[in-house]
Structure formats: structure tokens, C-alpha cells
Image (cartoon, rainbow, N blue to C red; front, side):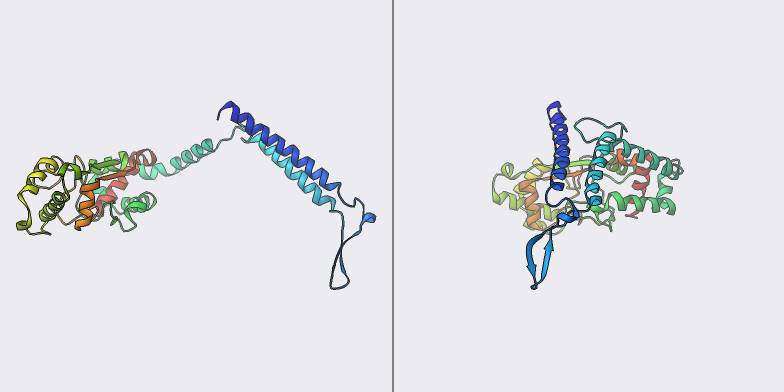
Length: 296
């Protein structure tokens, strides 16, 4: 916060408090001040039911002043007046760090006992998998689903098809550092709508959805020229680049012609956020073991 906005907020807060004090004091002086000064306000219901202009009880007025006094005390002890931090030195970031430290001290020993365990053993250990299941429910279900079967654009974790590789280090890297996968648009490069349609047919033929006799040689040649660098000449993909295998029946976005055409014409941009700092090394490894177990 700049000095201007700090002074602006501070001045606005102080002026508002002063205004509240004045307003309550002024309002208290309006109308009758004593019990004997009561008078009818002129409203009448059902013939004889009338309203008196009774003064507010003093305790009601005092509650307003107590509220203002409490607010002033709060602003002295805690942040609220510009960049003034308050005499208590409290900050939300500091409280968060303290709570995280307490949580780390409480839960770290639970995870540390699995640190020396072999990854393959972790995948089979029921206690470790229970912890991994809890971590998955907290951090992964939003994208991959509670059943881990994913959704269009979010990989299914229950099959044995790994876009970035299914080894221990590959899965840990995906969780800890995240992944960014980009497929550039190819419509202009292919040159025409007909060429795009031919490429869709060729891609579908790689997984047997379309008979190879329907594929044009020009599409095969363009695939070798433009697509093989990532998806390999055989279409089996490249886990190093996150390029999907086009020869199986597992599709990240869908296998119908329109979905494949959209991928070719508009490209794709997928991103998984890194969770390493949030989870830490031990929990990342346990979560990786649980994810690996889902496909076994």
C-alpha cells in the first residue's frame, strides 16, 4: 500500500469514527429527554391505540458508545488504520505460518516413517495408501474426480496410459512441479479444410477407428512432416514432451472427429499446477504411490 492510500484509509477511518460519535450524540438529544416530556406522535390505530415518543433507554445509548470504544481498541491492537500494524503485531500471514508450523510438527512424524520405504512397497502398503487417499481427496479430486477417472482435458488415473510417464520419478515430478502441455494450431500449416479432415481421418486410423484404406497418402505425409516430431512417426507419442499416444483407445479430450478436428485447428493448452511446496517431499511421494496404485 502506498503512502497516499495508507493516509487516505487512516483518515477515512478516523473521520468515520468521529462522525459516528457525533451522530449518536446528536440523535440522543432529539425528542424528549425526560420521562415527563413524553408526547403523542399523532399516529392512531383501531380508534384508540396511539404511539408515544418515548426517549430511548440510557443503556441502549451506552451500547453504541461501547461498540465504538471496542472498535477503537481493536484498531489500536490490530491492523486496520492504513499501514499501521497495531501494537499486538498480529498479521494474517503470521497466523497462517504459525498454524502451518503446528500442523507440520503434528503430522510430519506420521509421514516421515514412510520416507525410507521403497516406492514399490509404498504402493502396496495399506496405511500409506490410506494417507495417499486422504491427500488425493484434498488436492486432486477437483480435476481428476473422486473416482480418479478424470474428465475431458484431465487424465484418467485408473488406466495404465501415462502421458508424462508412469515411473516413480515421473509421477513425483508431475505432482511436485506440475506440467504444461501445449499443442499449437495446425490449420494454417495444413492449408485447407479438406487437409484438416484428411488428417482427422488419418489420426483415427492409427487407433483402428477408421479403416486404413480411407487414409490419403497426403495426410500420412503431412503427419510425418508436422506431427511425428512430438507424436513419433508411429503415433505412439512421447512422454518426455507429454505428447499422447494416438494408437490406443485412450483419449484425453475425446476421439470423435469434431474433437480431434478442434485439437488440430485450435490447438490444446493443458496445465497442472505444482503442489511440491504445498505437500512437501514425503507427502508428495505418498501421494505418488497412491496415484500409481490406482492403475494396478
